[in-house]
Image 1 (spheres, rainbow, N blue to C red):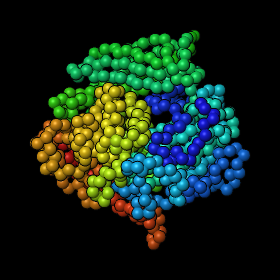
Image 2: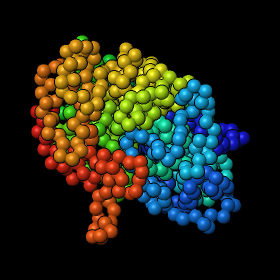
Image 3: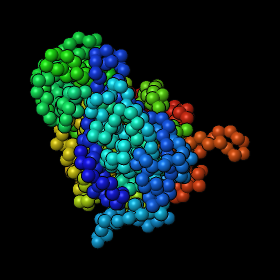
Image 4: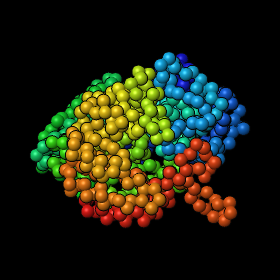
Length: 638
């Protein structure tokens, strides 16, 4: 790590700077230091930094406490904030909901850097803005005993929107992808006790143009912050590749590993052994291998007859066990990961899962809690999953960003088909007041924006590539179409992981139809337009990535869509918009009682008002009457 690296405020304005000092994205596997801790689920090599942090809010960068990361800094004026949490819901800054426009529209004229001919880099657009709030976070912590003497890293699982990180006065790095993990190596700077972690979070950067989702515009450290310690030899990344063959019965299995040993990934791991064991759900071993360790290694493939197939009704998971052993056979690290065998493929223009036509009974799901916003709990996720199963919902689209890591494992275990969406939406850059006008669309084909969106796709893929529930990668949402989104598709094509790729925006720019998306995806097309496409064009299977917009007393026309499933094999269902209302509990000033409030209720302008309330469940997770339609019709095609 380069100790000479100096943070620059101008990174906020530069679309070509989006990760500095950050570790490469890697699989979301957990690791353990002993058989016992693995069996008992005790994550002894991890240390949570969630809790109360010291905090100072500033209206803009010029007003922030610049030296707050120094160990000798007087932070007596700082207050407190809970991590994870949103600044706005902690009483700092204003609550703001908006759908398609950028939140500064009507207040400030802005155009993305390089988006118009001759426009240039737009220095100072965010770094010198009069309004661009900054949260300065400080936490003093001691390393837990089990992490001492090891390589220690930190993972920020979600920070909106741009963050600078220091440890013990030393600059560590920078990142601005709000919804994927940002990991940094703290080893050069960390000590056993009295560590000062400082994080400076800026509400907006050039990433704001890529994160124009239909939601409340929050900021802050809103997901877990976790330290993890790597043993002397460590699985940096794993890619399990269970493949169901075309016969629908036999399978093959292979594994790719990246290992490190007291140094950089790929460093010498001579003298260590790797033990790989694949078991069925009853614990019976199906295959094992014991190769010598290498920095990068491929194991297999091995042929497996008569595998049990994973699907919605029978989400059968095998158990992969990886052990890293010393020269004397002692265990250094253990990884356990559930894997499943399933096959998603196009067959004469029809998407088939395990050889059978796939029908998507889906919902779009924002992460939401009526008290804490996008800071959701395990209990929230369990309630959502129970609601899915009770109402015959078999699919979910992670609109429009990667979700919390545990959700993916829950979908694996519960047999929920997933469309895993990249954190990308630039709606306001091409659709203005309902009109398609892409003169300054980003990312488009603008060279300076290419690497940022590729990195978002890469991180989404690398983090979640082992989850059997993911049938589709989605390149993002409502960002028009151009060469940069085509490059995202080409990245996934190069990975050749057997999944299909989704992107709706090509219906807005048909020039990219041959090279983006394996399916025709549209939003809110009425049934007769679906029929028209399938009758007259029908090149690709048709999916409604959003339909049945459930706002007010909606969902009454659901039958007209469900009837299409019997009329057209290439029509394969869709994802209801959406699962849960975005509304917040506030105390009513008249009655003194709690009430749910929507967009526009917080003096937020511009706002799309009650448009934030279009779920099939209320924000408190109580089902709406519309759920009866969902349960009935989805039950017919489960």
